[in-house]
Image (cartoon, rainbow, N blue to C red; front, top):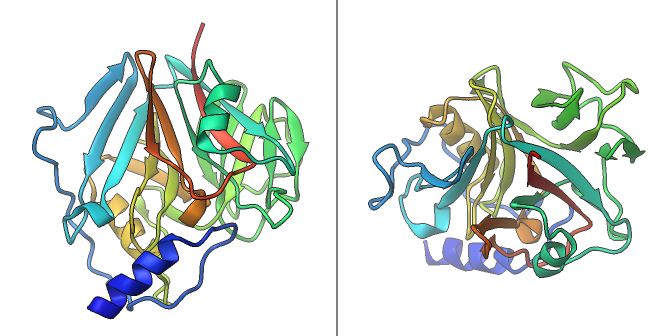
Length: 269
């Protein structure tokens, strides 16, 4: 047990640009049961602003190292934009200064050692990268509508998109667990973009040690968030989340590395 904690703590300090591959304990297939933190509201969600809610979950073993912070966004009140700085990544504080109108943002695509994104990225209609068609999924805004989709089921074929980020793997698809690979994987910080049955977009991060992909996929499927599709974004040292609470910046998770791309949330005018 001591060795596992030492490995987990050491890997947390490592930067992440691709999925990490340090060996962890073999994950379990038993879906975790979501736990509501004491002190949350009657339904668990705390209102940040109209159409914007935040909540904390404690997946098993129900301690802070597996804590998940969820931000639920109603597209009726908010719009999404992707921001990309190829070769010029920013820290969370620098992104906050660069995006003064954003009420929230998370990190997006995986990226290489040159701080160039991997997969497809669309920022205000400008297309970057080479799309994944054999893995993962995408968060897209098309004709003003935001959604999470599978790259295999709906590969990018050059259609007009206002915004898009791609990553892998899909964690949920059509309300079911989509990631069932039992290959060795390590617990690490994770970033996720998901969509629930009401069309709301849910951004999730694990601030500390986090979960394996298998355990995270199982937890999201069993949770009370009523998610339909969920996509894993870049994690590890890249994981970050910023939320602005009535003009007060909250660095929910600060990345260990600067990142070149973020998915940001803005109030609709």
